Length: 124
Image (cartoon, rainbow, N blue to C red; front, side, top):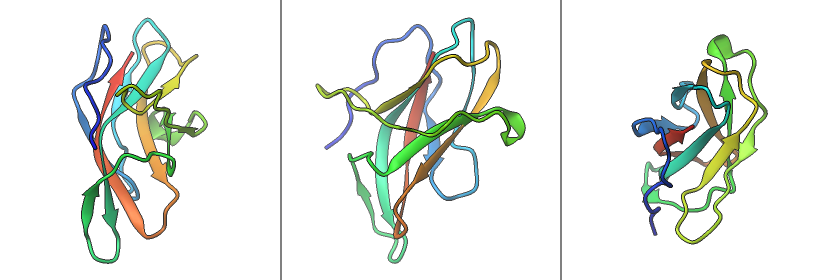
């Protein structure tokens, strides 16, 4: 089961690779005149930590995401991903952000025997 194409938007970043539990930021965006950002998961894989088996995944209930200003300060709270059905991408929307501010994406998972990876796009 895969995800369909992202929703139409005035502006969208190029797909960015992400992986949980690697100690790196999972993407970045600089807000524009609107202070809302949406993180869309365009692909999702579950990787078994013990044997390295990788499989396409669709459940996002174990994932959450936040945005942080450079230096890891001024982070939003973590949000779960929503999928409204009908083929929509799982997404998390952040509102009330500072305009023209760079933010780093931080995705975490709650499963100890797996990590997750894929691609995301950011709309604003």
